[in-house]
Image (cartoon, rainbow over all chains, first blue to last red; front, side, top):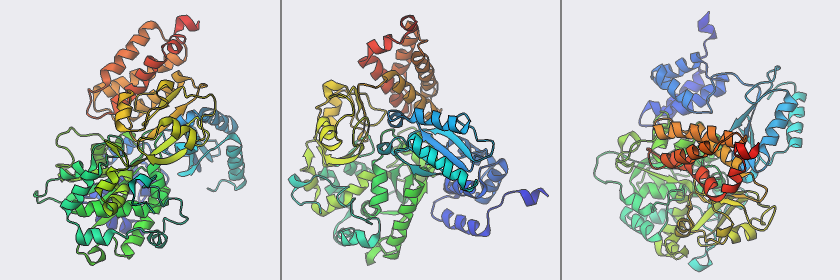
Length: 167
Length: 425
């Protein structure tokens, strides 16, 4: 039973990983890129996914876990269909990021770090996104949205809801 | 076209950046990309390249400002081990967003610079370590690299010259400390990005304990112009000890934030008023963080400082990565400092006690101060903690964490004291 439910990379992915590993002096170097792939394929990095990644790269589970827990982009919990990451570091803060976060949370009825009950939106605060010329910056599912204001967010959320929950 | 008269040069890395579709190989080539590469591979020796780089006076554009030619000359030639070239595209220093524009608008400039650097250092495998959030930029780079392979500008026997170099884009995953070069190497080896003790320096023992050169995107993107026009040409741009042009990422309270490449020696005031459309409120800034959030603050008295490595040190700060955060008179400096303290506490890798503990103390005390709950004694602890972190750790993250706190205490003592519990009550 559990074998069916356990996440497994597709054959195509495994071939991609093999080609990737060949580009480094050691297979362990491919860990970050492979974790990105796993997160893309499985949504988040459950312990089962981490075990699978360890197996595929010939690493121990602890070698995978120490990396998953060190880097902020790796998630061990599921998030909403739309992961909205607001930069609130200095340049974005000077351009109203805190107000923007409050607006998003009020509109969605959640706190920072939470997901709406319908599973559609997660709001988080992140560190400098490296796009300070377009502050405030919001990354939505890893796409950069720059010079974002309340009206922009309202439009985005309304349109996303109109699409019925598909990203 | 970059003028061959150094006095006429106003930009180097951004010379072709506004050309539509410059990211595509055929457009880039039509505008001169890879034009000088065959000459370098066929007629230059590695010694000559390193010599030109030394003469150029180019200093690393990532923040430390170490002379690039000198860095390259430290790589031992007779180890029997491979030498690796790593491009640092982690761009995590708050306020910095220049490398992103080079990568997304003119990726072939970076690739060409890496091929030339790789040839000079006898590199077979090179990597671009790009911050994980720059997914789109990584895709653009990968597409440009695919084009370059197809045109035999990368891979085996480049342009029939006998030189072989492979280039791989590697995405990080959200860790500021990975911008430090030995943490970057750890990360590229698939580990948590914890900076290494130095020595040994990466030039001797870096990636997989082999000789390794780590250079910033802007640094590598400057190499093609230097080799085409000569080291002396580059040295004649800018000013003594700060040769060439520099990209400044300007953000905060200016009317036109963005990246501006100007010759070194341009004043801060000229950059802000003539290029960035001036301040949003008032005539002089309250605070300018000149080189990324880890550099000490400047105030109105230094508004006319020339943007050079030496002048910045004289003014009490550093040129850093050229990330200029401008704050006008409306700014709450306590709130900004508290936010930066949170950043450093979040990003400390945790291996050195002064940093792991100190960044936490700074954040807690700054929260207290911002909330009007801090006492005189808290202020003493804050200042003491900040002073005792700097210089006592493996990497400079602790120094960076201390900088905003010490700057706030130094430049705005009255504003700080007005927030103390006795005063606020």
